[in-house]
Structures are given as C-alpha cells and as structure tokens.
Image (cartoon, rainbow, N blue to C red; front, side):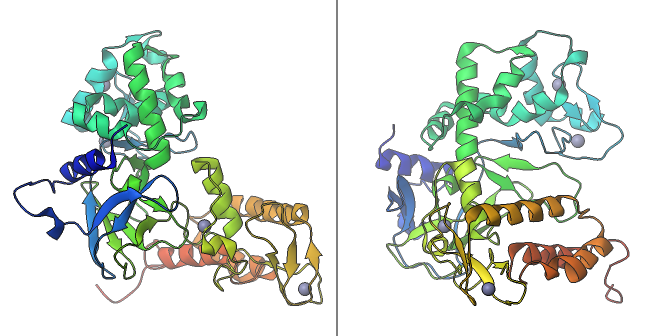
Length: 394
Ligand SMILES: [Zn+2]
Ligand SMILES: [Zn+2]
Ligand SMILES: [Zn+2]
Ligand SMILES: [Zn+2]
C-alpha cells in the first residue's frame, strides 16, 4: 500500500505535473488527504472558482464496459449497428472493418489474446465474452508504475467483480499471474471507472475508463464538480461552484437527477455503501421532490415522501393529509413505474411525448424523476431526431 505522499507523487506524475524544478503548487490547487467521507479523497488547498478546471485526467486503461446488457460494437472504434462486422480469426474480438483490424490498437489487443491457448476453435468463441473482458485485458500492457498506481486504487474484491474473466477462461488458458492482474483490474474498474460519454445519438457502444485521479474523488449526491470527455478520452473535471480551501472535491457516482431511493439503491449495489449525505437525509431532496409519489388518497392533491430517508424500510407520509403508506406499497408502485418505463421506445419521440403529457403525469407528480427524465429525453430529441429538426438556421 502506498503512503499518501507516494500516491500524490505518482498521481502528479500521471497528470504530467511532476516537474520538480518548478513549483507545482501553481498548477494544482488540491492534495490527497484522509477524507471525512472515509478512505482518501481530494481536498482543495486553495480556493477554486466556479468554472475553473481542477485537473485533466487520462485513463490508465479504457475500453468496452463489461455489462452483458450493453450492445457490443467494434473493439477498436466502438461502432454498433454495422452490417460488416466480423470476428478476428486470431483473437475473436469483434471488428467493423479491415481498417480497424489494421490499427495499432487491434494489433496490441490481438497480440495479448492470441498468445493464450484457445480451448475451442475461434469460430466457437463467443466474441461478446472477449469484448467484455477487453478493458481489463489491456491492463497487461501497463508499465510498472501504472500497475502500481492501479493497484493503489480502492477496489472491491467480491467475486462478482471479475465475472468477465471467469467467462473468458472458458475459452482461453490464461496464465495464473496474468489472471491475477486481470482480476485486480476488474475490481479497480468496477470501483473507480467512469463511463465515457458519447455524443447524443452516436451509434457507439458504451465505454469506460480507469481514471486514477478522478477515481480518488469521493461521492456526494450534491457534487461540486462536473466532468466531460474529449475525443482522446481525456476527462476534464471542472468546479461547478466555488470550492473553498479545505473542502473536499467530490463527484456524484449516480444519476444526478435520480431520486434518493434510486440513487441509494444504485450506490449500494454497485459501490457497496449507503450514502448519508445531506441530500439523502432530506426527505424533499432540498425541495426538488425527485422521488415524490402522489398521495394514495384520490381526494388528496398531496405528495408522499419517505419519513426517514436514510432508513430503506421507512414508511412514507403524505405532506398534505398525513396518510402513512408502508414501504412495500411504495416499492410496488416504484416497480410498476419501472416496468412501464421499460415498455417505452425511447427512439419514438411521438410516443414519448404522448406518454409524458397524457399518461404518466396522471400518476406521478411533475417533480418526479421519471417526468424529469422524459422531459430531458424530449429536449435532447427535439432538434436532433429526423422529423423534429429545428428549421431555418442553417
Ligand atoms: Zn471499427
Ligand atoms: Zn485479432
Ligand atoms: Zn447522498
Ligand atoms: Zn394525502
């Protein structure tokens, strides 16, 4: 385990801030410290203004996300919905074109995988399994320093965090020492990786990257930063509000516009902690009412909210008439709403608009996260989707 001082040095070297002849404090307004939220965190050493860039991180490794639910794309360019897909005859990775096959990226991926003895012919290897394991596989290319940096990141090591490697081993003989590194990479990825955003409507598979400095930021549901990516997968972290010296620099690991029950469940399932931040502790979520449901009494126009939001089995109560509703009834409604959302075709703008304005609004408050989500989707679609483009400004 690295000391905080050693970690700071490695992180600054990773960011390219490590010119010891210069005074690096001019470039960097934060340090790594023990965090009040637990473990380590980034803490401002000087006041940072809203809009100021805090750092620009780049990934140790990046590539396809591991989830089985994600549509698989070309292992080089990420393209999906392409009718020229084929499987590399040496490594079984999916590719969209010979161009992508002839890239340096594929050459490296292919060399790593094709060294391993395959237990079955390439024809019989499921390419999606290889694609799911590709991001951790790329950790085999890291130099010694980067491996140390990766191993110093926080990592959950429950077996579910390396299931993609267990699947990979059904097809390939992976040497033990390499398997160990792959498992460590999976655990570091699941704990720290960021999903790399793509442009709205782009037909790209979903990628993730292991950003070691961003990964040191702790979570808070009221984040003081935002981040965005450029085409080279660099991640710029910017202050969204003034951050005073001594304050921890945090990011939100879940959907910012999700209500408290959705955020806390997601954090618990993926990051294994129950958030207790001020937003989670406030039944109204600072007046946003993102999780609110309509009162079960048909005569009452009030909203239902959890009585003790930090207790996941809490009853809910109507703000207007005081009616108490047990958690199991609340869960039933939330489940039904989730299923209803699952039936929607998010590409169909007309259907979304009808669903929002004529149907869902009858059952849930207009502040609820589902309404907000549908509104955002419609805003994104208008002007972008064929048939709904803005006119006259070309
Ligand atoms: Zn491609
Ligand atoms: Zn190949
Ligand atoms: Zn929270
Ligand atoms: Zn009521």
